[in-house]
Length: 606
Image (tube, rainbow, N blue to C red; front, top):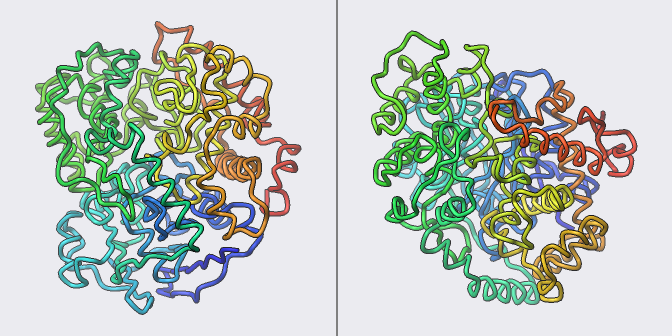
């Protein structure tokens, strides 16, 4: 059985507690990564605390497979209360930081309190943890800080750092990890800065956590399998940006704050090739091109801009300061959306609007909280709150970058996600509705959506707990040959009556993962057992948020698409079915019977 250890840092008292082994029952019920960080967050973060208050905690975690030669298991996850959404949030950073942390003997790191002056946290080659003065470089950007710390601790160090956007409390500022990876969504950077933490430095490079020979053989087989998949080549040559062409073909490419459909010829953007060197993630054979479809859309087509070079420079401006490009684009789009509709926001004259690349000058204003940038830095929802007008936001933020009325399943998962703007917790329905993985569902139809959404929601919670990079989802969710020949219409009908564990055993190829876990886990692992763990994690996230007073009202798109009443009817129908199948009340609360069935009673205090 994996015996993960937790180390706590109390910044207020400047105290580092001895490591403690996390209870076996917690590991059995929550697995690792996202599951355990969510459990620790639920236990330690008071419901009514301010996200930027001293009582908020940052819990950084690894998984069972972290640091092994399973592909991309250097990934790391952080859970905290988000200043952007005021909900419990999980954010993921790829790379090697997770492997480096686990190599020190620290599986989970919990940061509490607030330091009296700027510090960075150093974990050295002896796994000693100390607080170091960061006052001399507190106001440097994320890239400058990273370079300065590498001069001191070596280029093989793993470094997570914040920039000026976080120092200035931009609500959607993130954390730069080893320069090229990011805790992007949720505002973790602002939480770091509120605690006077400039960076976390792990000076000792990660070492491979050797597995048994049979496990290594399984990983080798899995790696060979993924290298033959078309998704492998796509990530190597185009990155996730390649998905944008599917969005165009399926009529879900958005414009104007996702309130309109943008008809765009693929020829207009085909020259976008990404930037810098390919991503270098721990033990990953793919080496993805740095090109994200979400970032590109948010700062491009959503603002009616299709000039690839200008969009890329805008993304790089965000990355230098670890500023979330999606929320940056949504905040700017909100400003122009409001101006265009002649609503009163602020007495400003910018001199430019949609489709003008001068828009990008606002990024630096956001970082510095200068002029209108001060308003934009407070987030998308804040701008609408000044107008008494309808906001398109869910849980205070734009949940992603698609035209939602034309993709019903993704619209549902974006709405019910505990942290609506997190692509790792909502975008999984793109797999089925657009790419047909593991099976194809009609993007416009309601049939099969809720059952599939719950299946993938629970599976994703498991993958995030292991922790497996989400770019591997299309490779892990392959349809078995035994059912691939069945017409999709018939499969959709079958999925209305079959249980999710049965669907999973029938269709999904997880044979390469479950045997790897079995040697690290005392209980017999089955597909059904994994789904139970995933369901328990997602229910606990919901309980945290409903303790805040959130109800079904926060799980709905507001009526900003006034010309699409069909969309809202479909959404309400899907939401009602989701609540029923998930074991929730009509107001979105977890029922007592559901708590008992999930095994949460006895594990947590309700």
